[in-house]
Image 1 (cartoon, one colour):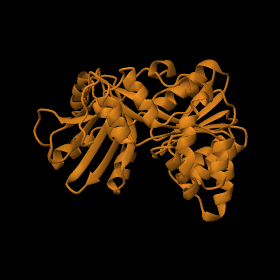
Image 2 (image 1 turned 90 degrees about the horizontal axis):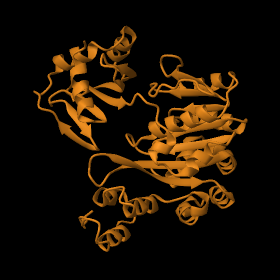
Image 3 (image 1 turned 45 degrees about the horizontal axis):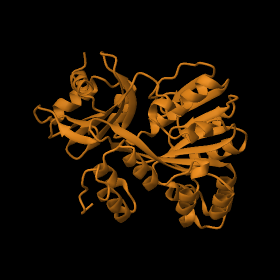
Length: 363
């Protein structure tokens, strides 16, 4: 058994989401959002490199040896599945293992707004799931794919880096392809997918202009495209899409967004009141005529007002979602305060509610 499995087994037993290994410090576990060391010695450079070497394939060793990071999925001998990133830093090797649950997530179990399920019923267009690293984007996308797989007869092609949740074909056919293993880039994966009679294409990360351009083409030509961006909010997402492409494509990109973008779902994870778990809280922008006009006329700064007024269409600002979750006693107000945009309003709301604990006014 690879020695690294002992740390992974301990992490799973503690209910952690991630295991961090780095030279000069003991192994760390991320538990409900907080990073905590385990009782172990500081890891040495040679020691950690040998641990990591036990789980790398020959091709991964070659890639890592050439100075590049390595991303892959790993199944421990106990059956735990992890998304792994191995990298080098000043003091030596580092590795991060994110636990991937064995059961495919379902939308209804994630307690996400019902509009997300409705969005999945579209046959053409683009849905973006955004947020910073570690906010559950992959879980939400996997649940959306499972919903489609369970309810419609489709050809679903999922391009991932690496493959995380493994989908068994149900009513649909689900084809999962991994960057570096089955395809050289996301852009090439989309180009190939368009020749494979797809109904739905999932793009694991829209990280460059070519990938974004190819994804736009797929969405415009009769396919449902699901994708992710590391942006925190509808405004930043729209601006990122426009800025990512060459200047001569600016008007074309704005036109695409106003006509083919279905929604932007931005999420974060907030601690539950008992601090024993985290709950996904989402901001949702659903495209309509008013939002499309704001995009076309370079007035994206006015998007938050549209989200605030769009509740009947399933829209909500992050602050609205946080406040409603606090009212339902689903999240910890102290933690929610850290994610609020209008902290002054948020502070007043919480301190005027006697059933909620006091918030640190310093923010």
